[in-house]
View 1 (cartoon, rainbow, N blue to C red):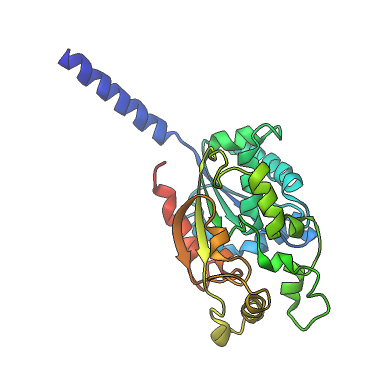
View 2: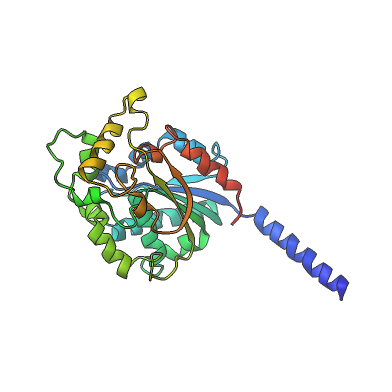
Length: 283
């Protein structure tokens, strides 16, 4: 009996090791809202920056894919596009251990996919292959900045800010606090009173504003600091998304002083290094 039990344990451990060794890890990046040009692979790549891609893949240790979709569309339309792209990546690279890194509205788009597995032909394929999702500054309860969309066009605020929140389009409407309250009640999982998500979302929230404006003179920093005050963001925020919203879904990973521009890059704070170091962790 003891020998039989020992043999069973050895076989189980061996099979588990073989399964781990043969798991093919891949990383996907899902950008946030913005212009229609984000449907271009090169524009989506620049959204993240080359050093963020390098660091997040541990110096290109694993295959990766940068999802690209029209940044003006709503979460349903965007979810269909992103799921189809990720499914192709999974199938082409034989990915069995997928990590999805999202920024801003990309976290909402990804949550739409994981909340509605039968909505798209490839949704379940993506869900099945995923280890977990790292959601950077996702407006899971909306953004007060989005509530003010349409007010900034033609003002002295930087063009980057106007492009991001000044356009009244479908993705901006999705990000409004009232809209997200509706989606969280009826369509999206993971919030209080709703079913659990099938895979873990790890949130990363931002609480800094000016960052390295005084050293590197990034116009985005002064724009976000200004927007935070104009929109009267509640609590700590990164200039675009308040922490209460980013932290509303999933499990805490870490808070960062990087603002909404820098927390999608590997510059002011080395968030990409953190993402890359996490590749070796098991499920």
